[in-house]
Image 1 (cartoon, rainbow, N blue to C red):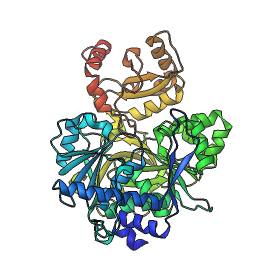
Image 2 (image 1 turned 90 degrees about the horizontal axis):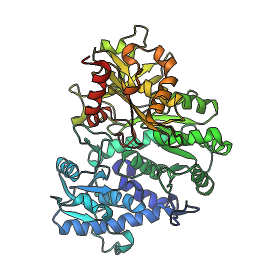
Image 3 (image 1 turned 30 degrees about the vertical axis):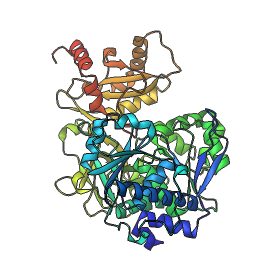
Image 4 (image 1 turned 60 degrees about the vertical axis):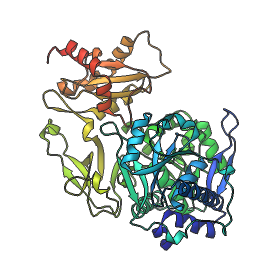
Length: 544
């Protein structure tokens, strides 16, 4: 197994198809119009690998015919759905000796897509036919996906594919992913080698299955489109551990569908982003049957966005097996929850070479009684260090994520460096802490919120009202929020408090810029609403 594993991910899949071909790898929902699914179809490892071979033979013929040499980068453009076909194309490109560049339709401007292709030296784009509009005027060769069932099967004797043993080695690039956030309007390229990718899923699944007992197959919740790194890690981890992925019918599946996935599919690991986990925690607080489902999971793991402290404490008190998996596209999973504590208390995973640098910016320590904050840094000798072009001048990867060390050696996440707003007087404000307080105290009236205010006298707040609540005016919502923040604001420095209702901007749900994982993009919000912010701050504070 280890020989095949260390060689390449296609070799791993082929090995499992030959030795454990009847193992169920995917459970796909059977759709009946808009009705929630009642049943799921099983796809075995052997079935999936047969699809990969079929698509790979087709791609070799098509790409060679277009003069595209082996080992070239080929861009895959998907929508946000998770489909067996998308996954098969991503793995089949590797089988056909090409390197997939994973791209999502959340990049809605074609020029950004084309620019990313140019940066990756991509030779062609393969895309879902529904995304034809994003490929208009494409300066690269392009080709829509052909349905797998329409591709003619090729016998082993007629196959033009190389032997799996001759595919990419551990030091070769397996995939090119994109960061979930943007810099200067565009994501960064993250090329991952076979060796690094292998380490990513070994580390994650080692933590997920740590101390586990029981004969039932591990069944994980599919997280979404395969173009995102966490989805690929979970797929490859399932291949490696002979587990399976259970696909929901939609990203915002209902608690009722969650129950069916448990009872029909044997789902026993809930894996998601913190943003998407919160509704099921709220449902569990009201419905004992949902609480029981979460309690009986082998793990409930999340990453990307933390859940609130109140929810985290409630889950610990109610014996929900929470695991926070701290990760980033550039470095994979590197920290995880300390057993026996609430999910938010984490420590580095075994094998990770890292350090915690004290934050020396004095403005972060406005309050002399405040705890020392440290930045998490992955060192250059770590097996999952970010690619060289993403590291700092010292060769290490500075995450920009801040933590507070606890007496037992665990660490409490305190947000990213850019979650700390620098005020007009160079003081710093923990914007994330304010947001958390709003979610805790205003959950019934606020659906989304974001705190901004770079180089302003105080923060400003953007909120989207909860759908269930109706106010006679936006001012009534603003006043209700301020009323609930009175005690909190009384304990804040002046530059940290939101006390004027004019500094609360009411917006529609879903309009605030976020990363793919759901993290607020503060700079993008400030850019989008710069004129409105200028007017209101002048109205409230004059010329400062």
